[in-house]
Every structure is written in C-alpha cells, then in structure tokens.
Length: 465
Image (cartoon, rainbow, N blue to C red; front, side, top):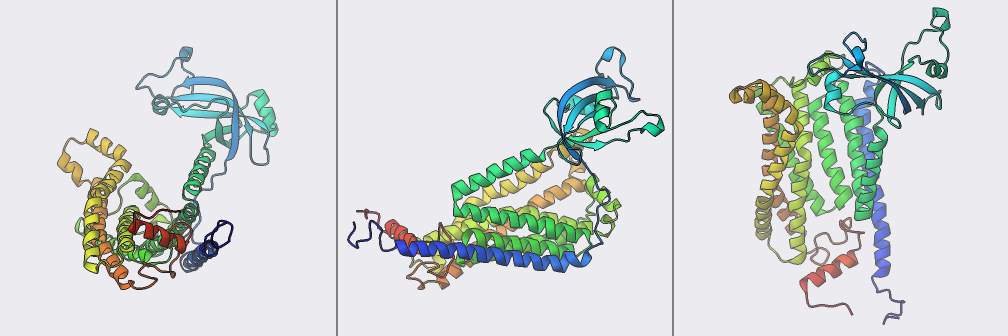
C-alpha cells in the first residue's frame, strides 16, 4: 500500500485511464472526419461521372492449383515440337509448351480437375524459371473447346482432363495471397511495435490508398482537372496522416504547413519546367497506349506528369517536415524558456544535417525505378549528350531535381513555422507545448506521464522510490 492508500496506484493512474479512453475517442473522431472528407470528394469528382468510366476489357479468371505436369515440349514458331525434343537455341524463335492438370479452387466449377496449357516465350524461359510445377497457384482462363455437335467429342471440363483435351490456358500466377500475407505481417509488425501509434499508422495508410485509388485515379479517367485533384489528394494525405499519427496539435500544424509549402513550390516549378523543356508527357509505351484508349484521349499528359511529380516527392517532404517539427518540439519541452530565434536556428541546423541523405534518397529512388530503361538506352545509344536529352530521361532527372528543391524549401519553412507556432503557444499548459488541448501526440495521450518524463529529463538526478 502506498501513502495514498490506493494499492500501488499513484494519483495520476485514474487520469491516465481517462486520458487513454479520451485518446481513442479522438482517434475515432479524426478517422470519421477523414472519411467524411473522402466521401465529399467522391461526390464532387467521381459520382457525377458515373457511367463515363468503364474498363475496356473485363478479364475473368479462375483460381486453380497445379496437380501434375503431363507434357513439357519445346516447339517452333508454328507450334510443332522440335526434333528429339531438343531445347531452343539462343537466337531461335519459339516457345516452351507445358500441359498440366489443375484443380479449380474458385468459381462454379470449384473442385473440378481440368487440363490446362502454359506457353512460355523462349527469351522468358531462358531468363527465369517461369514454368508451372505441382502445387503452383495459378490463374486460368477457359479456352474454346469443340462440343459434341461440332464433332469434337467434347464433354465436361473434368472429362477434358481425362481425355487430355486442353480446356483452359494459363494466364498468370496467383500472386495475391502472398502479397496479402506479407501485408498482414507488415500490419501486425506495425501494431506490435507501435501499439496505438501503429494502429494510427495503419489507418492512415488505408485512407491514403483509398484517396489514390477511389478518388484520384477515377477522377483522372473521367477527365476531371488533374491539377486540382492531385493537389487535393496530396494535401489531404498530409493533414490526415499527421493528424492521425501525431495528433491535432501545434506540431501537426507546423509539419502540415511547411510540407504544403514545399509541395506547392514543387508543383509550380513542375508547371514552369514542363513548358520550358517542351515536354509532351509521352515518355513510355504505357503513356502511348493510355492515350490510345477511350479514356486516355481526354487526359492531359502534362497534367499527369505534374501529378506524378507531386505524389513521388510527397513522402520525402512529409518525412523532413515532421523531423524538424518533432526535433523543435523536443527542444521546447526540455527548455520551455527557449526563444523563438534559438528554435529557428536549431531547426535550420537540423535541416542541414538531414538535407544530404534525404536528397540522395529522392534521386536514388528515381534512378532505381528507371534502371532498366536507362540501361537499355545506354546499351543502344552511345552518345551521353543525346541520351540526357531524351524526354524520358530528362523527365526522370526533372522529377529528382524538383523533389529535391521542394525538400530544400520545406526544411527552412519547417524551422520558421515551427519556431513561430511553438513560441506563440508558450505559457499554456504550464509551459508545455500543447498543454491539455492536444491529442496526446505521443503514446497513449497520458499527459501526466509526459509531464513526469519531462521533469526527469530536466532533473537527471531524480530517482523513483
């Protein structure tokens, strides 16, 4: 029993429980507001265009598991087996043909054993082990099988497997279960390590995914203004992520404002440079094919480049903005009497330290994403000067430079804005940064524990009795 007679619980325990419960309620409130904003954006950009966007091709596939490979042949370009079953030579055109039995695991025929076929181009077969094997999870599509009336002696799919008639064709491996499994591992690791903070992070990731795939992409395909939509999704992601992960407080406001400054600057530079460099936006086969589709004709490819630059640089901008805002908040908590000028100087110093690594992160990310294309161009074109003037290469360099410039503008903006907000909030809540009006930005929102930790940091000699 302790002096207050509460069975080992100190006086702040009751407050801690209440603060924790209130913190969860605030989590739910912020999540509800974020969902409401997404719903409003969907009604503005997506719902009015219902019926204008539909996929050109609807691919219907059936999941299956391979049971046995019954035939493995190398065939020439006409589909005839090579003599003696020899493999194709290095420069010889042809395919590798595998026929196998598989048990359907989805659709109306689930449980049925069918005969299927996989064709592998020679270059792909030599590059990787792509052939199916027993136990492989695959996606199949039905093939046109002659019926009994057409003289094919057809029957059911199961009979096709028994007679050796090919009734299905391999279209791809079923990779989604492994991707989902890895995603579940990632989510569990977030929750186990971060606990409540991990849950907030997971919710912010889901909401970001919804914003991109339920708002941005459908709006672009429906011919909406890409500049406005992309800017909205980016700013929404900034505010929503910071509010969920760190709470509604001055640190979130400082990071959001400074990150928005860098984002808008990156967008303006992108608009100017796309016109100065006379960029068309057709930088890949995918862009050309997109323009050939019904929806692609109404898409402004320059605006699409603008959206790609904003989204590509957003993660780095959010990272550095929060790094500065968090570092200055720690200084404010440790030294409540610190001046605004000293906070600003400290923020600029921290920004210089993280500047080099974050700039390298952006440039290396863009180089890594286009490494195959760069290798192909260098292997074909010997002139480096000509290579650097190719639009696809110029755009990759432009994206890295614009993202880096936006990052360099975000760093001092974060130092100035955070210093101004933190100094303006001095004197509330006993000199703390957020007092009790915040979200509990750290841990479980237990202000009592935060105050105790801050006191121990300021008085190193204190010990718990």
